[in-house]
Structures are given as structure tokens and as C-alpha cells.
Length: 175
Image (spheres, rainbow, N blue to C red):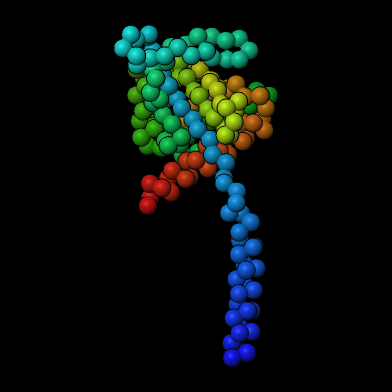
């Protein structure tokens, strides 16, 4: 009996150590972020539109459709890119997102995509980030835009969160 008790204690100790080694990561949730792409529209008395204030440094009022046309659920890959000594975001959308981006960009030349983002649990880390002008039909599913984010680190955090959210959503859809 003493041999079995010792073996059990060794197995218990190994399981405990293994749990400690693997358990260190379980307390941390991966950072996730949210992205909403809206389309500029004319004011609508039926309540399907809303006015928002864009840009912190020189605010501009824009009327958008309340419902977003694209979200983080449509993202395949987000990345920060260099843009003439500054940085911008590049978002690659899935097949459905590519189709929607093409349809809305073809139907609204001269209008704006209006982009909202949130990159942490804090409300100060969410705001309207960009309103790129629609200059042409976007058929490749990639939306690139300069972003109203304070630092490259904040942009990197946002992109990491978007990629984590997209991965989590794809994983959930595959189940």
C-alpha cells in the first residue's frame, strides 16, 4: 500500500506542477477589439441615421447609417502600415466583407466610410477613428485609411485586438 500511496503522490505532484506551468496563461484573456464601418448618408427622419462628430483635433459632423456595414466579424487580417512617415491601418475582409465593401464603394463615390473602433475595456479607448473618402470601387477587400489614434503603440494594440477577435470569431464559426 505504501508504494501505491507514494506513486499517487508523485503523480499528484507532477499534475500540480504541470497545472502551474500551463495555468499561468489561463488567467489572462487575449486582448480583443471592435471595429464598425458605417456609410455616410443623408439625414433620415425615420431614425436609421445619426449625426456623429469626427476627428478630435478639428471636429466635423457627419451623418451615417446607424447600422454598420462591416464589423470585426468580417476581418481576415488587420495590420499597421507605414504611410509617408506616419502610420495607417489596413484591413483585409473576408469574402462577404469584400462583397459588401465593393457594393458600397461602387454605389457611394465621393461619400465616406466612417470607422469606429474600441481597443480596450476603457471607454476612453473607443472613438470614431477615420472617415476615408470613397474614391473608387474597392474590389480587393482591402480598406486602408489614416487613423485618429494617438500613437503607434495604440494602433498596434488595436490591430492585435482586431486580429484576436477575428480569430476567435472564425474559431467559433468553425465549431
